[in-house]
Image (cartoon, rainbow, N blue to C red):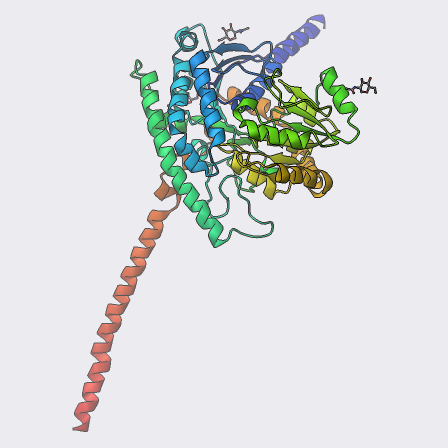
Length: 532
Ligand SMILES: *[C@@H]1O[C@H](CO)[C@@H](O)[C@H](O)[C@H]1NC(C)=O
Ligand SMILES: *[C@@H]1O[C@H](CO)[C@@H](O)[C@H](O)[C@H]1NC(C)=O
Ligand SMILES: *[C@@H]1O[C@H](CO)[C@@H](O)[C@H](O)[C@H]1NC(C)=O
């Protein structure tokens, strides 16, 4: 009896330990974009909180982190950081409303980013992760920034890989898991189709053209990737082709939530949408000065933040003055993210400058009535989560597109930061503060966005552990991964049918001609002969 009970206890303990066993997880997040790193680190943090042993490789110092995460930071030199900052400054002053064109213009910058991301993987501490046989990894999280070459790392540590993307499913990411592109009814990024309607001829045409120009662009990235892959893993003759590594991706975590954001589209089982992973379920308390400032804001308050990449000093001084002139005259209180507290745009009782902002926690505050931002995906996501209307002042990259999408959904207005003038800026702010339609639309969205069977955090834990348990997810791979464009679209079959149809038609024509000659012209001849 006693031994039985002891046995039962022992089994229970073993089962318990087995169930919550900690895995070794490696996150490769060398992106030079702070907002990308925030999303990727948020996923890593969830796994660390769950008790897994998470190691991350980054170039930037992560803002989101956890005490048990081992960080390997391969930083930029001072000059390189300055160069990055200068480029962002330059881009924020030139017109970048066309995404493909601005990405092409950024291609010099892209070369620099590719080089730095590859260099991070060459660092001795990073190479040691696979050279030192004492290290064992059960899963690699590969932070996506057009850096397919780093998938070779998963092979090196012999672990399955999940890509952590900072975008919704799209042309660049779909091929990893054979997610269908569906150009005829899934519009290109941040465009939308009217409810209850299909895509018009014009919409389909513009989606197709966008897709083709993107293909040109990805060709350039593909070449970069193949070169860097060869360079990084040149010392190992057993490395498979990069295209083989791409096909071995177990899953992609997308930073989107189609049920609320759209577009409604089919996804393969390996596509997991974890949109909003960076948003806290419950806000942390605000620093005392901000809590007081907002708490006493009887007419409501506005949050102004132009993101982590664009610093206040990047904006033209006269633009800053115009913004200050408008904001300082409002009865609402304003929290303005501003780096250089020695040189603020001006003093006003209703404005609180702060170098650092707990943006998510501030947006959760009920007094916030408007969020003025630069249309970064992260900021828009947080505002949508908390149901706050927006005025977006996009700068470059995907921002103009994000802003347009936000306006189309009715969550606010947008104006170019480059051509900002006092009067339209003031009118836009008043319109959003006084017309309730923006706040209502975004509040409705917010309730849809939060309504999910599993939260983003639960999804990250479940599917990461799923891939660890099954040593990859080969069983749910779409066959599309192994098919070329012609086969994937049945173009060869259509061509075959067309050829058969043509042959049948030609045969039919020949037979008709023959029969006509044989009988009709004969009978004509016969009748002619009869008349004689
Ligand atoms: C966590 O992983 C790192 C990297 O492989 C390793 O050096 C460390 O010993 C691990 N820690 C634990 C507690 O297993
Ligand atoms: C693909 O991933 C699986 C699971 O991690 C691994 O066993 C296999 O060797 C990988 N294949 C290639 C070509 O790297
Ligand atoms: C806000 O109001 C409280 C009292 O309700 C007061 O103690 C505090 O000083 C006020 N803070 C600001 C920044 O006005």
